[in-house]
Each structure stands twice: as structure tokens, then as C-alpha cells.
Length: 245
Length: 195
Image 1 (cartoon, each protein chain N blue to C red):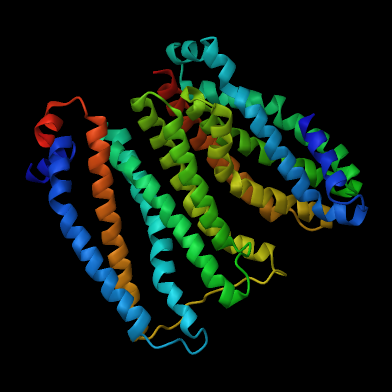
Image 2 (tube, rainbow over the protein chains, first blue to last red):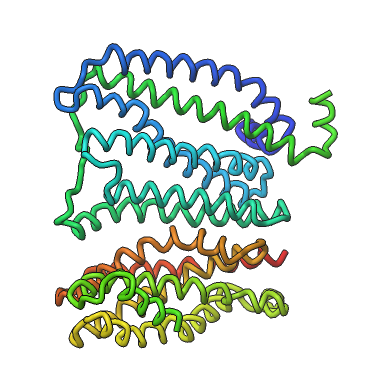
């Protein structure tokens, strides 16, 4: 029974609101520390790559954003599914709070990827499957947010966008697998591969720390957005009046 | 009709040179097919939602999933299949040889069927939305990317005289996945829209 108590508490907006308010500074603080240390480690301490020179340092921002863009979509789909199955209002609010962050991470991943691509590949954009898949992911986010904004009834908007998020997650592995098939399609095109460089530990630890920092940053932003979302949704509830009083 | 017009516009905008048009033909045919099926998808559920037929479906006690599946199949028979059958005319105008026509028709027929199924989810979801048409394309196009990849690949192989079986199998796999899952999701979406 005890294991289910926390789950039931998650369904209660005041409890989640209080939880988010208590933990936001902690996650935010650790995120800031991790990102600053990782930035120093990545930009100053790590040796330049023997082939890519200093330009490889872009990876310290590019990889975490790209990784998060996928992870946030999965988080959003799981939250949406939880909301659909257990009819949890908080889960729908969390999914709604995820979407804009995920879309921005996708934009950041594409943007830093383009800046990375210019010195490495000589071009900002190639129709490489990985790039295209990331772009499609951005459109999925836009579709999700568009559908949410397009439906006036909040309960309907929650459910409809949740169905879309769950359907869209089926598409993510399809896009992932099409990477291989598509390569065979465009054999004449220059397919740029980053490959798996055997990274030196001096280069690797700032990257891993940066991943952690970005993850904590995402949780921080998610908690802040979730609080705003809960206040907006529950604006007529008595607990909101007590909290804000 | 819309499909034919789109196919006609490409020679005007690209180049009237036959050899180059033939290279562009898979893209032209598939973009045309995608756009026209998007246009048609808007009317898949909309009229029935407005005049209450969908509500009667939901209340009839029969499985809404099967009903919507039947409706989507009918929709495909009336839009996707004619499109695939008329594709040889557009393809011939783009300089595709007669030998390639069976492959072109088969890939477009299978692809538009998968497209109708996936589009049914989007059409169901946008029932309750304002400006549903714009949203519908925003929702459906990312999901249609795999269909587009394999469909255009099959058409391209048909035109260049290659073996179209591998992409057709993958296209078939997407269609089967669509048959099994899309009606369920569409039924869930329509129920939400009707609440």
C-alpha cells in the first residue's frame, strides 16, 4: 500500500504544487553548478580534437540538446498516456508543460547542429536522415501544441493531444529505423557520419556532466511550468487561494 | 483532379525537358498524392460530425472501431484508389515509360491506403478544433513521412526498372500496422471529439 501512496499523491494538484515549489531551487541550483563546471571542463580544460580542432567543443551543447529533445518527447508521451489511462489531471498538465521545452530543445539541437555542420561538413544543412528525423520531431511538437491550442474545451484538448502524443511516439522508432534504409536510398549523396569517436576521458566527462546538467535544467523548467500550468487550471480551487494568500 | 493539376504544374515550374522530368517524377507524383489525400481527409469525418451521423455511430452499440475502419476503407476506395488509377496519365505526361506503370499504380495504391488510415487519426483528433484543416496537415504530415520515404522509393525503382519488392514490403508493413492500430486510435479520437 505504501508504494501507492506517493502515486495517489501525484494525482493531487496541491501536493504536486508544493513538491514543485520545494524542489525547484535544488534542481535549478545543481543544474547551474553542473552546467558551469561542464562548460569550464569542455571549453577550457578538454584538449582540442586532433581532427576537428576547437570546433568539436560544439558537441558539449549539441549532444545534450539533441538527446533531451527525444527524451522530453518520450516523457511527454508517457505523461499523456498516464493522463489518458488514469485520468490524472496533473499528468495532462505535465505533458502540456513538456511540449514547449521539448520544442525549444529540438530547435537548439538543430541550430547548434547547423553551426557545428558548417565548419565540419562545409554546409549548414544536409538532407541526412538524422537531421531530417530531428526536423520531423520538431513538427510533431508543433502539431501537439497546435492541437492543444486549437481545441477550446480544456478537457477535450488534454485528451486529444494525449492521443496524438502517444500515436506520435510510435513514429519515433520508425523514423529512427528509417535512418538505415534511407542511407541505402541516397548512396550517391555524401552521408556525413559523426561516427563513434573513442573519446578521451578528458573530453568525455564534461559531456556527461553537461548531459546531467541539461537534464536537471529540464526538470527545473518543467517544475516551474507545471506550477504555472496547475495554477492556471485550478484557478478556481480553494487551495490556490490559500497558496497565493 | 487536384492531383492532375499539381502534376501539370511541375513541368511548368521545373523544366519541360523529359529526361529531367522523369527523374523528378516520383517526387512529383508522391507530393501530389499526399496533398490531394490531405485535402480529401478533411471531409472524412467532418460532414458526418456536423449532421450527427458520427454520434449515431457511437451510440449504435456496434464497435466504433470497425465502423470507422469501414468508413476509412470506403474513403480510400473513393479517393485513394482513383488517384492511384489515374496516376499513369500523370506519370506518362512526366515521361515515365509504360513498363513502369504497374509499379507506380501499386505503390500509390498501397501508400494512399496507409495514408488514409493514418489520416483518420488526425481527422478524428481535429474534429473539435478550430481551423481543423490547417491542424490536420500539421498533425498528419510528420506521421506520413515513412510512407512518403518508402512510397517514393518504390515509385523511383519502378521507373528506373529495379525490383520494387523491398520498399513495397515495408509499405505493406506500415499499412498493416495502420489497419491494426489506426482505427482504434481514430475511434478514441472521435469519442473525445464527441464528448
